[in-house]
Length: 518
Image 1 (cartoon, rainbow, N blue to C red):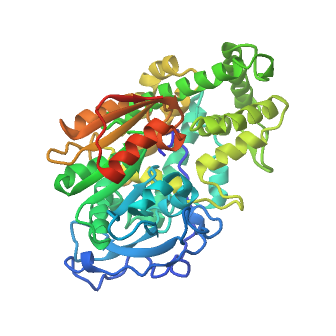
Image 2: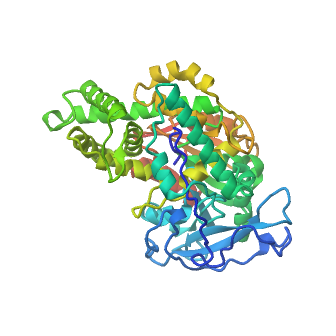
Image 3: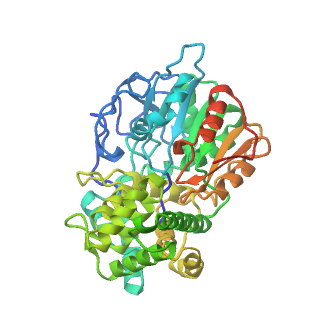
């Protein structure tokens, strides 16, 4: 899922050797020993999956896949620089669960990208395997760590100690000194990325990942690409469809990124999206009457949250010792909890505790957003997020640009406006130029692509689905609307959405464009 874009790059700086934990995983920079013609014919060495590395989020090795069988992992070689396909290679980490159907029923491999950018597909797919087990009837379920992410030549920047300090800073500056500190910390982070991952930074654009997808399709033995993209994964899927329209088989885009927006427009759209989600949370609480512990009305709930944030700006609360809950950490935690209605109970708990002087739950929610593991290490989700976004996006904002736009952000989002506006400085000093104003996704000649938008989505506002469907082109983008809450639609469990998506992926039934569920 894409992250809100306040200035809060996160990363892992100590160099992690992945070879010992992922079979066949090298340092991502060796000589290929293969020609470009050989790479599509490489054989993957599938083995039982090891425990994830810190850069992937840590934890235990995945257990048996939903529906039976084991999760298997492998690595695939791809050119580090697609402009020099006979040069050095990178190793991309993959995971799969084999199809439960017979050979006659099997269509191929269904590739998943769960978003970010920067999320590890190798760790995410097993976590949500139950949600997609019905699709195993005709597909091997496959996901991967995109280049620069997790175990795939990860972008590495600052170390855990520096990141703990970084995330304590004020990312909504109120004066010249706080602005100077924010800019200095951004510059230091970006310099750390260049120092630790400079050779990889020019090669993590979405167009590079799309070419990796096509190589993956060939290596997995599929004539067409079967694909399920969520959040940023919809942008990756759209770029793939543009580059290789004739190779699209069946594809679903859920929680859809608007491909027509600039950096500023995207940040403002997210500000509105998170505000809508917070409004819905407050109204849901108020509708419970006396059982709502956060306020007497929706307006009262939001007023108390605003007052808490103002107090935290002046005096942080005890959080997860020795760190304290700052205004920024609280905003981060609130935003994280708005990604799913299932998280609203944790937001309620966190706010109740904060009103009593305890910031631990909101800080733990913030840690989840930032990729902080329970042992204090960090995944590289934030480093990869910044590296990929800044390599893709040509726009570079200045302090004056942000100050000029602040009134619009504050009007659209009283709580989240400053938080997301100042986040646009993330790429200001990035060492690699951005590729374009926005991604190109037009795909004339492609098979139909099912585009699913959620009216209550905070991170990828609903309007993006319609714009993606139009940008893909007539006869390609097929729009489906889900009237619900949270980031994404398929994982809501809505029967109508499941029927439409499964019907297309499993049986090729294209729903009528404009269908509404919920």
